Image (cartoon, rainbow, N blue to C red; front, top):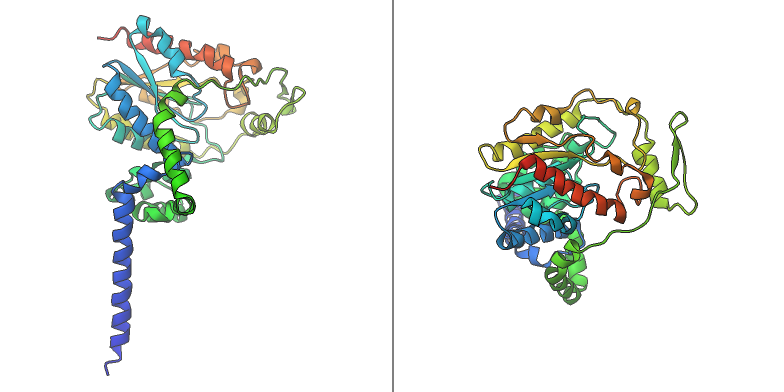
Length: 366
C-alpha cells in the first residue's frame, strides 16, 4: 500500500470542500441572490434599501438632482429642502446613513452612479474641515465591511482589505469580501428561524421605504438648559436629561484632545481622492459642508488639527467648499436632541438653509 494515499485523499477532500464552499458562497452571495431577503434593519440591509431607493429615484427625477452623503449627523430633510425646488431648480436626495463613513460612500457612489454623471452635485457633510485625529480611527473601522458587503466583488477583496491599517482587520476584511457568508452568518440564521416573517417584512419595507424616509419627522427632544464649563470640562444637564444626551455630550464635546498622527488626513486623501478621480471631467460638482458642530461647540483651543485636506481639495476645478460658518446659527442647545444630532426644529431650519446655500454656490440649473 502507498502510505501517501491517505494523505493525498485528505488533501484532495480538503481542496474539494474548499471549492464547494467558494461555489456555494458565490452562488448565494456574490450573485446578489441573497440580497432580496436581507434583514432590512441590518447595516447591509439598510445600505441595500438606500441604494435601491435612490436608483428608483433616478428614474423619477430630472437632470438637476443633488445627492447628499454623510452619517447620522448630516440630519436634514430632503422633503423640506425640496419645498424650495420651484425657486432653486434643484432636487435633493440623500444616500447617507447612520454609522457610515467615507469608504462606504465611495462604494455607494460606484454602484449608484456608474457613469459618474447622474448628479449635478455631490454634497458631503463633514464634522470639520481640519483633519483632527480622534481615538476612533476611520482607517480601521471594520463596520464598513458590514455596510458594503453586498456590493463587494471578488475583484474588490484585496484592494478593500489593504485599505485597513491593522493586519488582523485586513484579514477580517479580506476573508469577509471573499466569503460573504461569514459576515452575514447571523442574518442567515435569523432568516432560517423565521423565513416567512422575514420575507413579509422585506416586502413591506420595499413598498414603504421611500415614503417612510422622505416624510420622516424627527424627535422634538431638546438639549435646552445644557451648559458647559470648559475650564473644568464639566457639563450641567437640564432636568430629565436622557442617558443618550449625557453620553453623547461626554464622548462628543468633553473628550480630551487626542494625539495627532495624520491618519485622518491620510484616510481622507485616499478615499476622497478616489471619488475625485471617478468624477474627473464630469459635470458633477463636489461640495463640502461643515455640519453644525453641536449644541455648544467645543472651543478652538481643544481642537488641534495640523492639516486640512479638505481645504486642499478646493484647488481642484470641480470641488467647492461651503463657508465654514454658514450654519453656525444652528449651534444652540434648543435645536439639538442630543450632542450629535439636530432635533425636529433644528432640521426644519437647516434643510431650507442647506438648499439655499447649495443652489447659491451652483447657480441656476443649466
